[in-house]
Length: 339
Image (cartoon, rainbow, N blue to C red):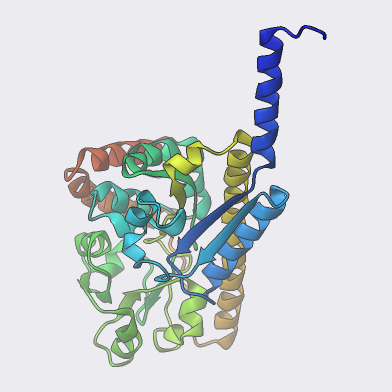
C-alpha cells in the first residue's frame, strides 16, 4: 500500500470538507416589514429568487410578510433567539434600543439621492459601523436598500427653507418632527390614515407621507397640488440582516452571493420605484392641475445644515449615536454636501 504523508491526508480532508460545504443546502426564514402584495415586498421576493439562482439552488429563503411570526419591531430579538433567520426592515424600528439605529436609518435631510446613501454605506464606512453596532445584538448586516427618497405633499408652493416658516404639516414623532420644527414649520403627529382628510379639510397644509407614485395613487397630489419632487427630507435605510452565528458558518462563496445579490437588488428596487415615480410625475404635470417643485442644491444644503443641529441632540444620547454622527457629518463634508 502506498504511503500518504499526514499533510497530504490533511489537505485531502480539507478539500473534502470544502466540497461538502459548497454542496450543502441552506434554508432560511426571513421576515419583511412590508405586507404581502406591497411593491416593496414583491421586489424583496425577487431578491430571494435571484439568490437561489445565483447559488444553483443551494440557498432557499422563505420570505414572510410583516407580522407573520413576530411584530415588525420584534424581528431583531427573534433573529438573535433563532426564531427567525433574518429580516428585511427599516433599521429605525430599533431606535428604542439605541438611538444610533434611528440616526443611521434616517438622518433626515442627509440624502438627495439613494446613490449617496449607498456610497456612504459601501465606501464611507457605513457598512462597517452598522455591523459594529448590530453584531452585539446577534445580527450581521449584509447590505442596505431603500424605497427611495420620499416626495413631500403640499397645498402651498414650497421652493425654499424660508417657505417652511409656520407651515402646518404632518410629520411622525421623533427626528422628522424635530428637524421640521427647527426649520420653522409647525409639525403635528397624525396617523397616515388621517392625512388625506386633514389635507382636504385644511387642518394641515402639507405632509411627510411617501414616495411620489404612492402619493399620486392615493389622490394626495390632487388635493395638495404643490408636491416637492425629488424630496429633500426623508429616505429610510432598509437593512438586510441575518443571525450572526448562521452568517459566520456560511462558506465564503455563499456569503459573497448574499452580498452581491443584495447590492443588485438595492439598485433594482431604486430604479423600479424611481421609474414608477417618474411616470406618475409626468402624468401629474400633464394634468395641468399639479405644479411639481424641485428644490435647488443650495436650499437642500440649507435644510441639511438645520438637520445636522438636530442630529447632534440624537448623538448625545449614546456612544454609538455619536459615532454615527461623526462618520455621517465627515462623509457629507468630504462630498461637499454640507455648506
